[in-house]
Length: 604
Picture 1 (cartoon, one colour):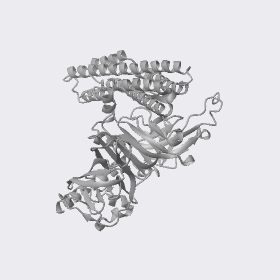
Picture 2 (spheres, helix red, strand yellow):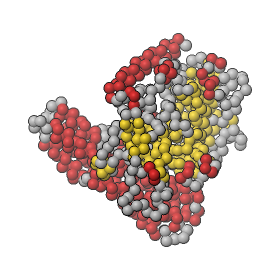
Picture 3 (cartoon, helix red, strand yellow):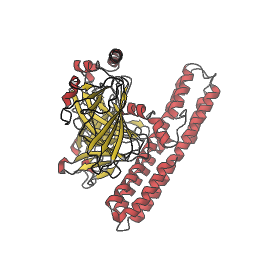
Picture 4 (tube, one colour):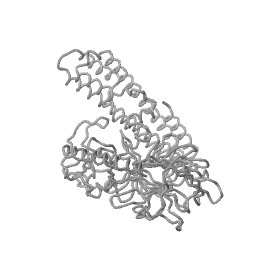
């Protein structure tokens, strides 16, 4: 135990020093009064032991573990480091300074708890399920695979009422709020139970999708995601993020039919033997916020009853009639009308002002809303952190951090890999122009002239391939729209065809909106040539940076368009899946469109 305590103390001291350094940095970047502070209890919390521990609750009657029990683990039997008991007398519990996981002796899943500013809170129940969909009835056994200060790994076997065995492995490492779960023999899916009303599928370059119970009248819908989604836990203090490495795994949401209290009950993730799912708990008071917006709010500055609890890149997603949301990053000040990559001329609708967070919805059209539209104007703002910035505390994780720690890639590499456009050196306009500008700043452009030409040429080729991919999406959307238009004339398929055609039309409109911002591959090559001409000239850094900014703007518009198109095709695929189950008269047509959508996503 001495070794474990020494490591814990060292990590705590390093963490405290880093936290103090970041706090001083944040004071330089923004007045401290603008940000909610954790207070003394938050500082003390960081000093707690980050190492992993394994406990046996003993022979007391098994029951759901009360939240306050984790504050006094000395009431349990700690399994010494390196030991692997053949059996547990009570519940098996393992934890670090962020998460605790309980495998109740009479339970049928893993209960996940998170340490909060007010103590431990139960956040999720993770249940491996058999292929027939039956949930296990009881825990049949626990195997200790690893038990030391760096990680605890337990293999759990569950049994269904029919006698089937369902196996999974749970892994928790030092100081991480991320639980890794690996599917074992007999496991087909992972069911995630949380207290949530909103599930968000983030899009790092385009618009998010926000799924709300009140927006759907079906008991189940497919999630248009390939690798991750966010459960916004009721209360606004936690986000449960689920991540998996294979885009072949699907996910669904089940709704509870409770009338006006209808909410999201469970999320299911498809899960084959040997597959991995990570569940991360992003925990902080006020880590997400929602606010209803009506037609009376239009044109006015709305002061939110919320302020960001820490510095980061905060996303504001405004839900619409369907699952697509208009998504924007909060700015540090109100923005006048300006040209935004991929969005045209806009006024950013969300920003921070001193201690306040504000949003502004545009005025109604001068000619008025279409009949019935004004009375039905309802939006919901969802605010949450999407990425860290330089002042984000080291102790805080954002969704992009979790993607990097689990999938091992950043958002740009992620979307490029999905589209088959990823390369080892990622010759995107952002990466290449930043490198080129660095050579000019350091007066190395003459020495690197040949490499500059080569990298700019690679960038131009990348832009051209990306544009060709976008054009294939445009052709696909037009093709689907034409198929659906014909099927709208048939009685059995009219309703489904109309819904699918709307998704295809939205995709075409999205591409058309961004064409001016994306320019052309020929223009990109011309801009690249203009940078090459600057090599060897005096006082040309400002011009190089101007050209670089224009190229980055084109790349951002392409990224935004590509992400939007892929999200639209994923949603089209899920619409078809729902139609196959819920509208048998249109199932044949829905299967045809679903197959074409899957083929489009698989093309690289």
